[in-house]
Length: 387
Image 1 (cartoon, helix red, strand yellow):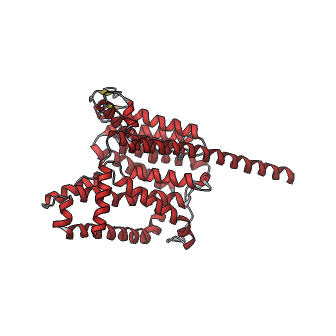
Image 2 (cartoon, one colour):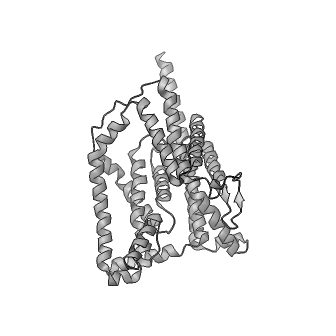
Image 3 (cartoon, one colour):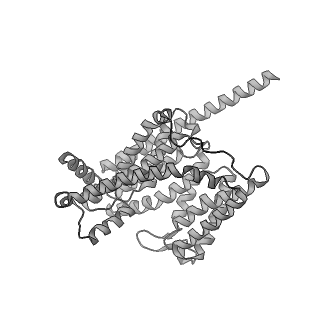
């Protein structure tokens, strides 16, 4: 137990060394993943990411509080609401795409689920990816305020970068699913490290858990291990049990979930649209959010129609405010001198990782482009020979 306490304490102390400079560098490192998730057209992916960063400028200034580009709509004072924006870009846009496809194909999915658990071969393929994703998620989860979204994107980008077939990511590659989900799950446990050892919540969920601890007269921190070790063990046990419960529920319900998406889309899409709009309205009980969801749905549909990927927009929406606010804070602390970023070893290391990530992603994209061009040339040659 002493060794475990030492590891938790060391991880927490390291996480608390993050100043605004380190958080900005972490955000830049996360944004560098945009190249990896841009698909076959990096330029369009960067344009999508830039559009997401522009959206982040809407709302109040993170330092002065001055409203920017809200056009008299106080609902935008805190920026575009994340959940309605997300629902519009990814749910409503897919509904519009589905409506467009009614006239050119089947409106019902006929495939059936024949396999619930991954095969030993699948597990062998994903084991390295799962281990890397778990470590990435734990590390990012231990950094207060980072969250599972950042962990999932970073892990996915790393899996695509290190894959021998990166061009297949985005087409249902099991390694991509394993990378994102393992990092997301690892982040949940990682966020408990600063909470239990120092009393600092790692994300919004652990912030609620901190309040629950305080209500019951418990103060998370170093003394929690000494005075209430039974509570710590119960938290560990609950994490283990919750993962087992998720596995059982998912395994037992996967066929039922598949039947839902197998419904005729002429029935399914209107139901999804109504539920999406209800979800947008329920966030703040505002019809403005409903109209915003529909507007972003049209934007997302147009982006997909003309080949602009949507994930870079999501990544920019998550990391943009983090990058801007911490950059501004660090410049205020350093009285406007950008040299402060070169004096912080952790920030310098993360910026170096961002540069390496961009270079490796660029090299990977060039290899993919050459491979696709060679395959297309070979196909054209075979077609000509047959004629």
